[in-house]
Length: 400
View 1 (cartoon, rainbow, N blue to C red):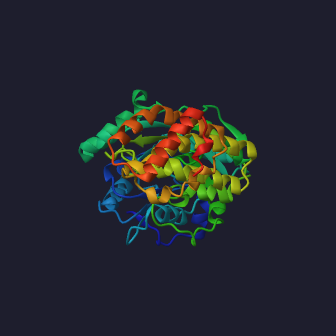
View 2 (spheres, one colour; view 1 turned 90 degrees about the horizontal axis):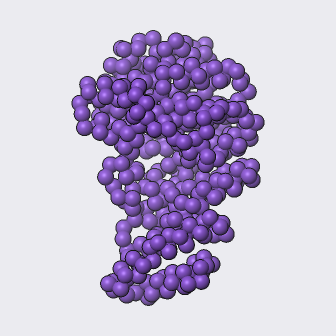
View 3 (spheres, one colour; view 1 turned 180 degrees about the horizontal axis):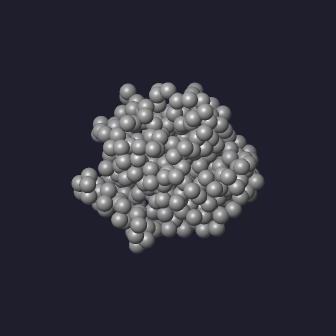
């Protein structure tokens, strides 16, 4: 029988949980089923100190039946299920699932992520041997799963199960493979770990008390166009975990399912129709700024700024062009402008060179397109600005 969040649970039982696996869920029930099964398999032998917490964000698919079926398969594992009466949005549901948890540490994963069989054993050992740490950052590998959505419920579990056991289906993420402890989390906020500066949701295992110490109730959590709405965990990490002791696990603890994420191009959207432009151009900049404003070590911040600047610089020219000249639709274009969201990196050499390289590669096509368009004053200004930038090999002229 599935346990609901308001079921009576003793204080001793609450205190006994070391780890909560938290899954914010919305639809994708066939993929979610194997996500939950993989979590339960990894929890075997740790039933007394690990729980699984699910916050169903008012799914239109029957997530409860999936949870109930899996609970019958693993009756000794505590699965706490809550279904919101209405859709809270991504960020609120994220905070809700952590609020429902009881563990000293929480591991929030996506409903298309699959915990490896040895991972809970690994995490518990790390926590036992490093009692003073507040955070674990783990590596991961990846697997394409979009084709699995085209087959039946029975086949999908078999298909994913077989693929997860087959190294030929798994792709390394390219991060360092050695493990180590650091005195400050700051030292592992670094692009080298290929986790979007800790933005990859499933890579962070954090102390719940520190998380709960960060105030979020008064923040604007609607939409999907800002740091706290897209990467709510980074908002908390930057406000509550900098300077805390941490551990990096170079052994992959989870497999990330690729190919089903609605905010990207996975489900058929073009790049400009997806949320990627606002993420790359605006939100990545907000990540670096949030870390910096909360005291990130300067050396670590510079690495973050350079990484962020490469994305923003690559989009600067196309976004100016689409906004003012071609008028091609860009999702969240109103959130991207004013350009100050990216021009905070105006003096960054990587930003400038990336923008110039993009201009060099695309100017001819833009010029030809402009010749066939109805000319406008702003269009003339911008095409001449771009031409002058190329002729002078200078970025300074972008100041508008």
